[in-house]
Image (cartoon, rainbow, N blue to C red; front, side, top):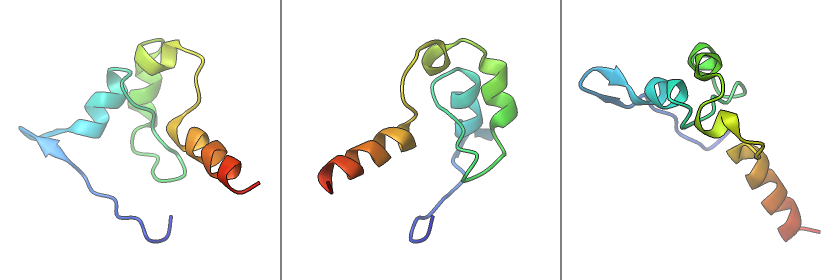
Length: 69
């Protein structure tokens, strides 16, 4: 998205986004990068993937729409 900055965050040499997607603590956003789709699919039914809930970017889109009827 224009105006947004994206960065790779590592701790101890490990990609934190990959670790979070693998553990089911985050979704990968294919509109931003395809880098984490394998980790997300490996998470199977862990964490956020085990629940019927909106992805963060879908929730933000709905909230923005509610502010601008």
